[in-house]
Image (cartoon, rainbow, N blue to C red; front, top):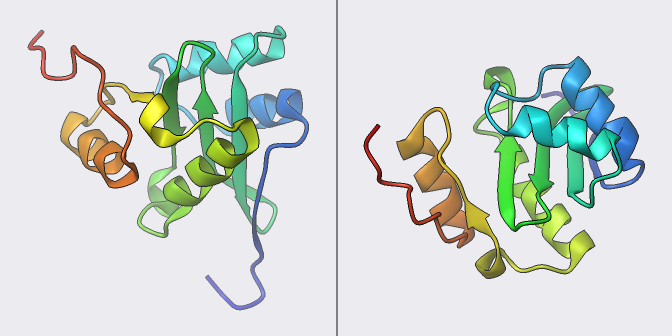
Length: 130
């Protein structure tokens, strides 16, 4: 990241953010993808997105039922975009991390570390074995 690359996070225009997230495949094919489609259909979910320059670098969605979902493409990971995006989302919707729930991601241990670092409780079936 150069000094000229601007990082910004927004919650404005949720339909457009959901559209961008789908267009740029900011999801792993789990429940985040249908939740993004639900935002386009006027479901009351909250969304935030961080941009690096003009490129979407991270999306965070807080579903109306309380689950926090965050996706950052590999090329943008380990730069703090996930935490930044989740914090902006939390402030915008007025819901603290302790009131949210973190779900099972594609890489459960990585998801666990992320949610624990934010103070987001894990869903009850987090440790289930399929």
